[in-house]
Image (tube, rainbow, N blue to C red; front, top):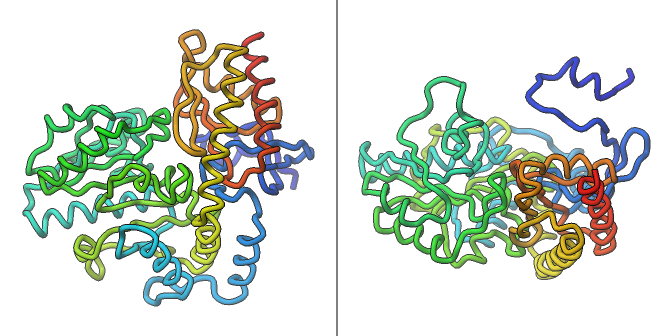
Amino acid sequence: MKVTRELFDEVMVPNYNPAAMIPVKGQGSRVWDQDNNEYIDFAGGIAVNVLGHCHPALVSSLQEQSEKIWHLSNVLTNEPALRLAKKLTDATFADKVYFCNSGAEANEAALKLARRYALEHFGEEKSQIIAFNQGFHGRTFFTVTVGGQAAYSDGFGPKPGAIDHVNYNDLDALAGIMSDKTCAVMLEPLQGEGGIISPTPEFIQGVRELCDKHNALLIFDEVQSGVGRTGDLYAYMGLGVTPDILSTAKALGGGFPIGAMLSTDKIAKSLKVGSHGSTYGGNPLACVVAEAAFDIVNTPEVLDGVKQKEQLFRDGLARINDKYQVFDEVRGKGLLLGCALNEKYKGRARDFLVASANNQLMCLVAGANVVRFAPSLVIPDEDIKQGLEKFEAAVASVVNA
């Protein structure tokens, strides 16, 4: 059977609009399509391919496990899941881990845990969840409602209640709607889909203090910012603020679907036997790949390398911008960077994405005004240099169009 982009329109639900080219092979930071055209990957599968494509350590761990055991269900446990959970708890603030298959599921579990904890310890009046405008926490009905983008949550009928939003980095607005009825505050310690927005030190510290004041749980959605993306193993480590619950996914599996919710002993006790679950959560194949990825990322070489590679990107992007004057600023941290378009090019992020693809570079957008990069954390410096040359050609084509 001949597989073409047209087949997508014929057989797939039309909630996506994928590119014309279909990738068939990846190696490191490079991808090849059906016609053997080679692309440099600055997208990383939306911050997922933390070690690039087909990293040998991930491939061999998956091959080895595939000949042992694939699936058990949560009626039984398995060695890869327990090893990975131990590594996560040893490396973070957490004592307990819940495994699932995606960031949305990790966030769903985090929100359910927060509500159940508040109910058990403070009563049913304590149910308010506060999140932030332009935040993104997944596509389940609960998580998409907590996410602060109405375009994603409207049009599906009545929404889950007791959820409020304020602007990110606006501590006064948060303080104004918090009370002892607040169950939890959920935020990304670096807003991703909302435009690559970093928190100010005063804001992030203030959120923690307000949560403590009102006995509310602080949930960090580290689905995109976690597993080395910012140059710290998790972004909270570079902010000096520790959450009560943390969600992680995307890069955790290096490309294999897995998510996890992390919390403390005291809070985790509220998810008693039978109160929540996942058929595939803690799958041995997923956990063994995630363990291999985690072992590589959680090293000084990789984490320090992220900071050095960030500077290469920033220097290269500054040179491009000096020449073409298209960005107001380059936002973000580590290898989650966003080029915010200036007034002249506002709303045209997709034009830069398409032009990049035409120049054999894969990148992303974060809204209509930000071009986003989230490459492999171990992308070779030479690939960064060549990729930025392709990006410059893309910028030139948009500017000169």
